[in-house]
Image 1 (cartoon, each protein chain N blue to C red):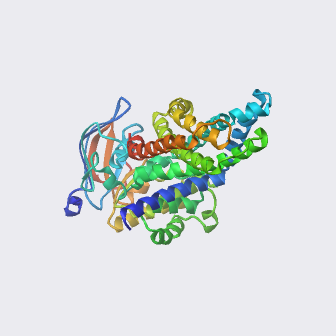
Image 2 (spheres, helix red, strand yellow):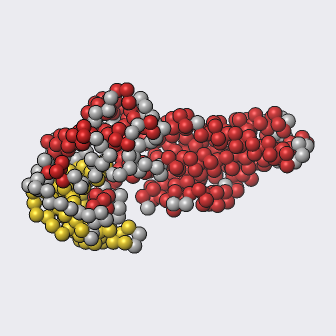
Image 3 (tube, rainbow over the protein chains, first blue to last red):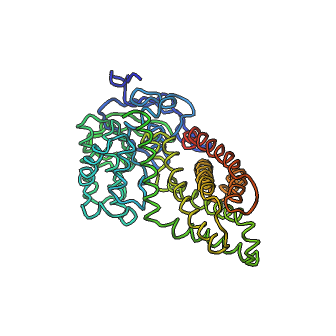
Length: 235
Length: 227
């Protein structure tokens, strides 16, 4: 299938996207275009629709109406073509409690289509990159702290080398060094040419990345003014 | 890597993962197998430990115990994908849903075979049965195991999607498995010399049930986990 996004098509293009959670319109007609290599900070009050917007871009929520294109593909008809190239860090870990950290990350690397050799090469590097000590790698996930599990979740995404990162409150549950790791991860992703949409209430951290700030409220984009100056807009 | 080899590698990976989780958590060994043995013992109490009666009904009691225990294994298998957002991660991984289905069904099948072996030992010891046609016993046990594992995995995904798996799964699954129960019981009746029937003919029904459950499951799993 042709990959139009390589020819200058936006990485994310939403036109009048409406998404329901049950009968509640979590997104009530979102228009948003994100170009390749951008870092976009989604902000807004709780319940504004940030998480639903990220899940919509991941193809995990079906739009009720409007159009959703990611990496040049229509997400309703071609979502399976897109998903392997997209990483979503949600609120849950996406890890199996009874497997070790290494087994989890290796499984997700293989599930994403990496060969055994590729996966083996990337897994340990990704885990160490996330600041997890070698002592923890052989531990079952349920024995780790919430912050350590969060780092392992990120490692499971890093090994896939996605083109689009969707990060939902990535700093939540992390200590200072963990937050630094997340910031470095986003910086590395952008340097590698990836695009990042991040929902965060910790504006001062994300501001360092010079993001475009998009404010959502009531399921619609209410402000898309451009770059954050780091001045703390308050949500 | 060809598409078929990639598909089989994905399915094998999922099966290995589920079995590794079961090995670590020991739910099957520590809970499902003891439950099945307990059911066999309770049947013995209910029938007054009369060996002649027990031998006559051993096949049916065996398969009822297998099906009840299979509910636990199937529920456990489905629950693995419902915690900590692992189903979302699976959707995002791009893993073919059919490979996921085959892998999960294979893991359940392996657990069921283990369960059947232990329960057969229970039949020999507790009920005093004798095996007169081992080949028929093995073939029927394997075919019924495939049918139960495939149908269980399919209905486990369906019930999980509806969000009421604990209570709904038995109501959905047991009626579907009634033909398997009948076929497997008749085949075992012959294999154990309990009733004069053509057990091999009943394995045909088991083969058809196993094939239908596997094909329908592989085709429908994508719809079930997406919607």
